[in-house]
Length: 442
Ligand code: SAH
Ligand code: SF4
Ligand code: F3S
Image 1: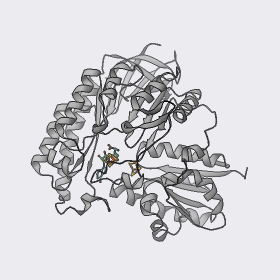
Image 2 (image 1 turned 120 degrees about the vertical axis):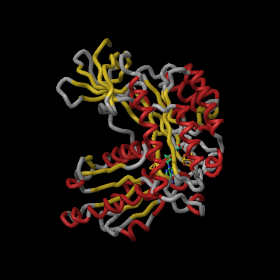
Image 3 (image 1 turned 180 degrees about the vertical axis):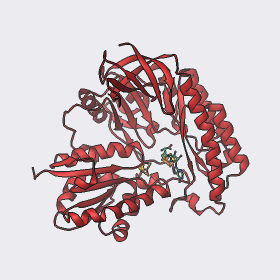
Image 4 (image 1 turned 180 degrees about the horizontal axis):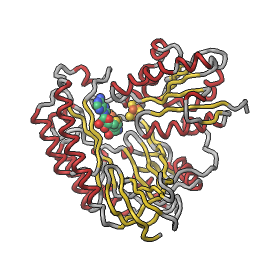
């Protein structure tokens, strides 16, 4: 093992990047890199980037600019760009910002330690291949140290859907599912390290179809296998596409005890004309039918969603239909964005772009409605006794912070239980983003 060095990783974008950053840290850790929490201490800085909207991508260059002074102080400092901007822009990144040493796309992370070695003598490396080999087979397992009780586990990557606005099919490539056994082994490792709540990740996680002895397994079958791990108490999955919500998966929400009553199911728009333009291949009605069936299977299910306002050609009437759909579903939580033109996607070519002021106005109207619903949903928790997984110490003395089944943060003073336990807490009040509670029982 070489002499110890410091690694700083900054993560942007979705949960899949959070998971990847952890795997990269482990992989470089096996090569003598210690993770640190500030770029000033680092011998290597990795920016794990997101390309989904223009602002996210541009932020990388402003961050890189700020690292100039660090490199002046420490000429041995190495700087890498990973993730979706790396995949999309490749060597352009080094042309625009020559202080970058490594550019590596999401499919080639297992090659990072070798790259780290080859840049030591001043070379630069760009790797945006989609290699034949399975990177997961080549990434080392994490050391058996204790970790936080909630974890992400990527089970599927890439997307074959090609929504007209989206860069993901280009940055993450075609859909690939990991084999069931590989996932079970990783879940077992996580559970041994103290994990009780696992969120299965994929750009299109409900299209999962991983290899199993008896042929391919779908997502409900995978969840069933994972449910057999006794100490694993909670299972979630994200992100799903409405068209892959099969009846079997819907029914699973009523049948599998460990599957949490919470689902992120993006719809993007409530207008069929816009959905068609987006190439979503579903209608507002078919989406609402899925929601209805989910509520039949699991009456206490809460929903979360994603919305884009100002997609090319969106009229006031189209936007009203989005508000209408939101009123009908009443999301517990949601993300909403102004449409951002992404080079290389079909919608970027569309002549009917919506002016920025109209996008902004629609976004604030939508967000006002969504946050009103979010607040109402949190309000319904007050007075209830909920099972909460204790995750970390709170800011106050004796306080612990946990998560409800609906992903609400819950604060309470507790000395009868510890991190990793699931306890029953009575909800006393709701703040903007979290709940206050008192201990009831273990
Ligand atoms: N695979 C996930 C989405 C990944 S991107 C899915 O299909 O739901 C996360 C969210 O970013 C999307 O749901 C969409 O709401 C938003 N998004 C994607 N491309 C965008 C763009 N060009 N402009 C604005 N928002 C976008
Ligand atoms: Fe993007 Fe659509 Fe694929 Fe989601 S389903 S990643 S929005 S192309
Ligand atoms: Fe962003 Fe890539 Fe995730 S573009 S949202 S980091 S898949």
